[in-house]
Length: 127
Image (tube, rainbow, N blue to C red; front, side, top):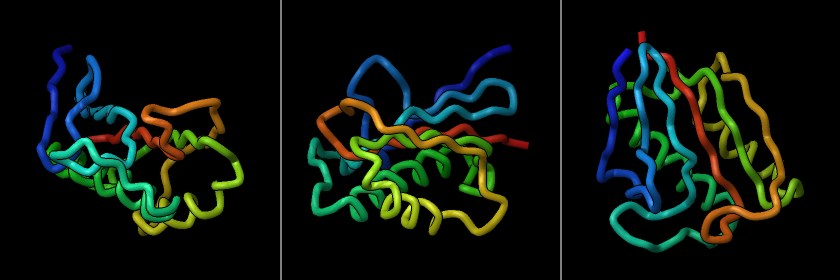
């Protein structure tokens, strides 16, 4: 099985040795996204809701680059700096899906890249 790499300038460039997304077979694996503003090294840090919106906009851009959207997402992992942020992140996250929500886990971790509060990764199915 071969793999296909997806990179778009509409989402932040990787900050390490990884790609924004990799397609293997009919699965698209999106690397964890944080609230970096595409084309800059600036973080959105005006509050957890706006931080989460930026993460989801970054994910949307990567999905679009692979001819997909949130309807194609089958699995999500949300990493939080503190579980007290769960309700606000969940509210924003949920607004990007119309129905048939993907499987998901949410975990609190000791630290995230660039000391952000939320990082989200996804797996999508491409028919």
